[in-house]
Image 1 (cartoon, rainbow, N blue to C red):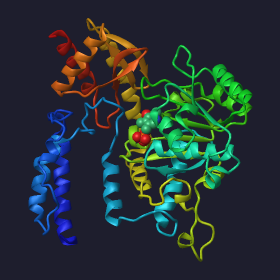
Image 2 (image 1 turned 180 degrees about the horizontal axis):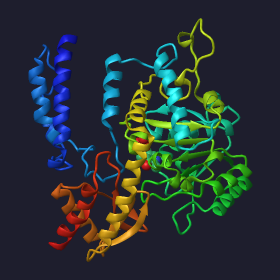
Image 3 (image 1 turned 90 degrees about the vertical axis):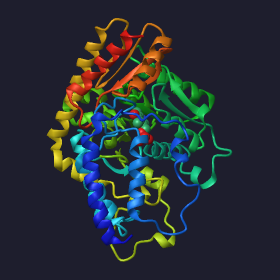
Image 4 (image 1 turned 120 degrees about the horizontal axis):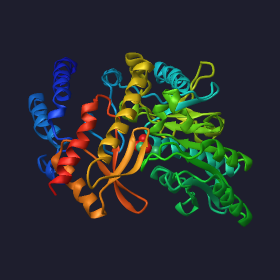
Length: 462
Ligand SMILES: *Cc1c(COP(=O)(O)O)cnc(C)c1O
């Protein structure tokens, strides 16, 4: 296959994509496949000789779509959405065509500079302070890891990278129990240890209690431990709970501790000023991450981390062997100094295309619709016999349940088999609950309200 063939097949792929998206509503959101089904249809080893593209494409059509969970299905309400606007898909095609690697300004001047400008556009769109800069990561997990590594190094007076953690004081980090598992993963990878991630008690709204945060830090200081930082959450994954950002930042600052805020999902909603009360005080944070790939329409993968001052993170992550030195230009931004991996994709292009193709007003309208429709749906579900709303909508996420856990799980199994909608479960307050996360880019109010129709039908005929 050469570039002339690519031209022919890329056009066929574009036609295929159009038909795929047009037909999504007629497919079950999740395929009915068993583990191993797909692997069993592939040969055990790679071909020794070239195969015709016709065969490869035919196998793709026969094997892949039917065994795919359709994240762009308008009735995908599971987890959080991973939205892909058509504009972002187009940008990804162009980035793929150039297939660059943007580790340094020199290896990707356009990608580097568009990244800087896009971080600025998004910072302003979210109402963050003009002084914040930032970078693009693959995922919120990596951004949070970068922030926690930076907290570790600052706490150890920049000695952890050099000497390792053996013989150092015991580091302590603080987060609420609603915080995403990516924080747990980061403390493990950073060598801080799961036992040193303090899960601060919550208040009645499932938000971190600032007084409890203060008490936890004081207790650790009294024991001679080394508090390193606080991770706060806006729009937690389970039920969408948010910590009181201003009050918790005030506590952290009173102890001289840096704060990282995980707004992976809810951050996108902050393009709407009316939702910014959820993170009031955010201007005091040192680091904030949100995923345009969740709710803004910039397709996976794309996580933006804002930094009040990048100096500490650069000091933590920069490593410049001779072969990465850039010669003969003035000061430049090398984004690999800001992130964990050296190599990086041109992710800023899809932000640029998405923001321009829909405008902030177009994106706000979608998010406002999702929030309104989630409220409408919660009201409709609350009227159904045997169904109760477990947690009210926070932005566009709420949870519901049946009278018993067994009934809730049985209902979810029937929903899954039915295939018209896709919902997932979590545990809340010791009970199994079903999450509804509204936010797919192309969903309509009818798509959302179908959840009530499906639940009514499937809960009635049990
Ligand atoms: C989705 C999510 C994450 C993880 O995001 P990735 O980009 O997949 O790493 C972290 N925190 C919260 C609150 C999330 O919703």
